[in-house]
Image 1 (spheres, rainbow, N blue to C red):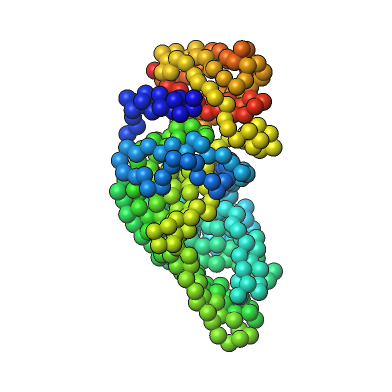
Image 2 (image 1 turned 90 degrees about the vertical axis):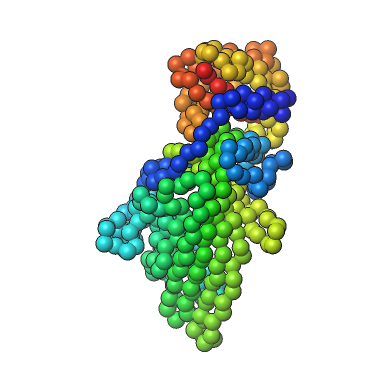
Length: 366
């Protein structure tokens, strides 16, 4: 049933196909923005990271979360006085930042010294989005660590076919322990544009593939020598949409020759109670919506595995913005929706959650 629904939507969708978009500085998160992300490491069947090019179609509607995170963009001034001064958003500051985010703990000095309370610092400008450095607690000392050359995560305007690269580096001096140096080479390629479907909805996207290589070096004072070793080659597949704040979907892989191993998948989502419903019933409810397309807002949901009972519903825009949320009772497997009349013409996603699981349906209002 789900495959038939997806096929019908795809045929409808081809008539109302998206056009190529451009991504710029305004499409990313600002300080104070919070984004809910679902996390997994399992790629749905019948998907391929090799799909790219113009007017591409990526169907990742089968993603099932293992956990959820809330990605919070912080004001630099909220991360402490030392960092607020060092990464101050001032034109003459070479380490100028206007966004901060919590980072993962590290290990320095050959792993002997914990590097905790990590913050990453970014500068989002009209020309690019770059990481300018990070800060951490090293041996009890609050330590700003600037990048010598900055890591250009995205160059603007971001258009299909763009290719750019950057080299970044940092060094950490650890008193009485030694030093650590990191170097990275990034190549960004905007290799596709088109339609992406996730459990949250349907999006008009650009895909950016970032290939990362580098090396790390440590000097251990007590031994009087240093070591250098290459980093594993990685790729980041990122689908961006206008006003998306963060990638709608990001899949990270390790690369070994021609082989790729998925290490993490993160995608924008709504809150999901993973202790019930979807977690215990990974197969979604079979559902359909009709008429689709429709000329008005009166439509009906038909749920083949839920005859009666209350359902939670959320209506989302093409950019993933929640427009409406409400509860309704299913009667003989049907829910009549008359709450959608005031919506403008366009594409929408309707998420349904019942006692037996969830469903995500794409709907076109003419």
